[in-house]
Length: 396
Image (cartoon, rainbow, N blue to C red; front, side):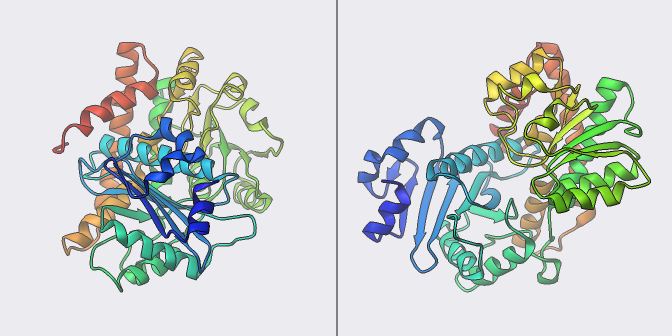
């Protein structure tokens, strides 16, 4: 039986694993629990079930050595419970490396609201999640991710404030004192990172006339497309939502070339100067890497490599310059962390300072590329080695 089904049947509201202690020992016999063990190296893992909303929430805290864990809340219809749990475990670990690599005083965490096929996001569901969130007592701070918005953060923050003064939610709307949608910060970091990659491969940071294959035209993809059109880069675009595709086509009309593709895997085999994955993760794998016809990969999606070692090495052998996702897409969490710091210290949030910090992404990329060349290892491995060194140091 799945963990949430078991919780529902036994009227269990919360199952926790905190630093080796499991609140309900019998869960160790559960098949899903056994299957996730190879992904499990976390300080905390929490399952919450809210009967009233049929809310199924998972929060993973990977590491808090540098400070409270921070990561987005993802609302998604995963096919299986196991898929949802593995996703939150992998994403929270990636957040630890991301936060350490950019010198933030935070560990990595992630949260998921797993929707069933007949369920939609709702105000009561978000409020129920917020009441679960406060049980971690500020050890996990969350913000926007796939399936959530600044309005959702407002709803959760309103609920959190009823129970605690601790900062548990960031990226609320500006009218409530938050920094708003983090997507522009992420997109800015990706765009800047693309120029660093272009300098390495083409000898120039100028993207004018270059062809960028954009996979995913959500919040980040849309803002990134605007940057690219403004700089006169040509586009190849794809998204499961044809309305988003049409929106980018209207933006590009009369300015740059914009080709739309819809068939499965077609985007991978399109010839481009930069392939930019900006949708879900795991898209660089044994099936897609052989199809790639690009010298650079630089995008916002988390956990782009299905198998960190195997697929990273495959890109290295193909001489494709891969900008490690947790390095180049750090703009959003940098913004969230600086908002958190301002709130906890009673200071005003400063957007200018956020962009100054995001500029460090380019420095990190150059450091990683240099290390990769020197040691002849994939850039993904170089990024992890540098992040692990910084993870040991709370002063970085």
